[in-house]
Every structure is written in C-alpha cells, then in structure tokens.
Image 1 (cartoon, helix red, strand yellow):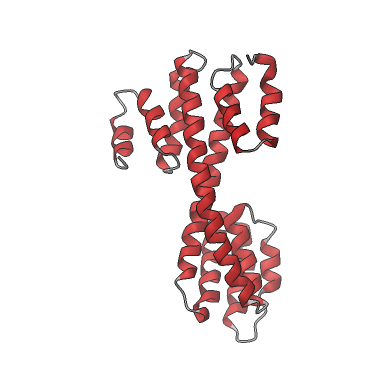
Image 2 (cartoon, helix red, strand yellow; image 1 turned 90 degrees about the vertical axis):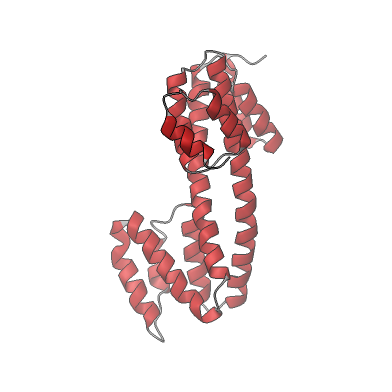
Length: 227
C-alpha cells in the first residue's frame, strides 16, 4: 500500500506513464495519507481546466475555418489572431496592427509579424493560429488544409481525454473528503471553475453533488443545466 513517502515516485509515474498508469496514479492519490496529494490533485485539476479551455477555443476556431471558402481563410485567420492576441497580450498590439495592414495589401508580407507574435504564443490555439497564418502566407494551401483536418481530429480526441481526466480528478478529490484527508470547504473552490467551464462529465457531476452544500443553490442550478 502506498504511503506518504510515495508522493514523489507516484507523481513521476504519472508524468512518464501511459493512460492506464495515469488513471491508476490518480486513484492512489485519492487515498494517499499525504497533504501533498491534495495539492497535486488540485494542480492537476487546474491544469486540465486550462488545457480544456484552450482546446475549446481551438475547436471553435477550426470549425469556423472549415466552413469558409479559400478566399476567406486569410481574413478569418487574421481576425481570430488579432482578437485573441489583442485581448490577452496588449503588448502585442503593435505587431497585430502591422499584421492587419500587411494582410490587407495585395502583395503584403505579414510573415515577419507572425514570427514576432510567437514570443507571446502559449497553448494549442495560439500555436495553431500562427502556424496556419504562416502556411497561408507562404502559399502552402495543401499543407494548410491538412493542418486544419488533423487539428480538428486531434482536438476532438484531446477534449474527450480531458473530460475523462477531470472526472477522475474530481472523484479522487471527493474521495479524499470522504476519508477526511481534505476539508469539504477546500473542494468547492477547485470544482466550481471546472463546472463553469463544462470540463467534466458524469463522474465530475456525481463528485460535485456529493459534497455540494445545500446553501449553494446558484451552483446547483448551474449544474442542473447540463443534466
């Protein structure tokens, strides 16, 4: 049976393991008598949520692109890039303005601006936008089409994986509450952002309902929207 001294090796096993190993590690963390396991699960929940939101944005962006005629692709990519980067990274607006101006010119070269924006890029959605803009700007339309197709498939699979991961982590945290290894008051701030981002499935809903205070009517209403 795992004990407090096994937290480090378990975390390493998760990082290096396959999906089955990772699922097994999460279950063990749910009952490990080490407060570090609670912290580890909470961080995993937060990371999974960020990844889920990133891939949601990616899926929405790809879906819009797939519906467009070829002539509309570049303007849409520029629009998505300027809207997203401009909101998240105000310091990038100088390059976004230059990107818009270059893209509006018939012989304009916006590739230097795209490369400059990579200094801010984080996550799957932002990397996709810049990679897609680069391929279109270089006239590599076949590779662009392949990128969109491959990204659509990979994103769908990733979202399914993250949904399952959120279920597993929520169940493990709820079990720690059952075992008096985690205070119930510490659980709600972890699960509420996951609920609002719609990142979990049935496992998450069950874990959430088990420990949702009766006074939290607003959260209960939010939860029941998807049931």
